[in-house]
Image 1 (cartoon, rainbow, N blue to C red):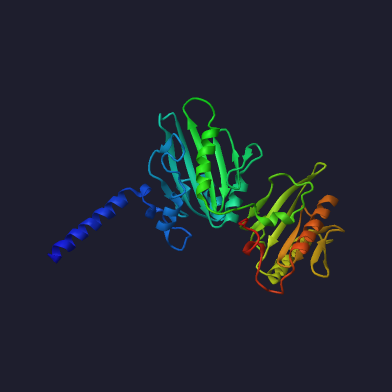
Image 2: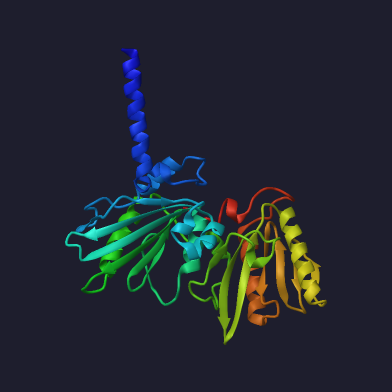
Length: 339
């Protein structure tokens, strides 16, 4: 009797395995590697739970089971942009197709789970364009002719509509996107680090966070930047967080050596609670606490110099420098936009 029960159990287990293997798109356990503590099945199930159920948006239902892509096979989903997403902290994506009851309209949904809310903002900001209409869905979204993208928490969501005939798909996109946003818990906002940047002359929605090889320098692991325009002059202000004041001093020294190799007039100055670089007579970079900030290009005019000084002042008013080599940076506390 026991042998018979064991045989039946083994046959059932084998059948379940074959069924799962034969339909990988429908099985969260087939999502592949993720950065989520080695639990791809749980991660995929949590991500799939953000997809609207049939009828959650009136008139819409799923056209089939969801499909998952991890870090090892993201190229199968977005071949041309996969490398950027991986650099920006991609973990896992679920895709699903929705259709209306009469089949006249279909919509493709992609929900990307990034490493943190800061990384979700980063990839969203990297893809947004001023040609789109910006709307309030999640933290922020933008609407094109047949696409709506938004970010909230560690998720970046894209909804694309395909109509066979009829009017624009804006309302349908909003409804589908809103159904996802409502399922993401928590209150989020744009990364707080951008509050240190001055408002005057700022180019709207030019804020960017680069999580890897910031400005192309190996000594700047990651950083924030914002575009500015003053009477036709374009420049950028940047801010680089570091794990400690000691690490910030090391990064600042490397940046000073780089600038000095290009311009011998660059000179460092040590102040009461910070150090800066001038070239010539204009502040081009500073180090304060665990931050390094500055202006690009280094030869920008007076407005850029004043902008860097204002950013330094904002930091001084908001943050008391930590002791040498003490832990703490904008990424570890203030920069991820979660409230």
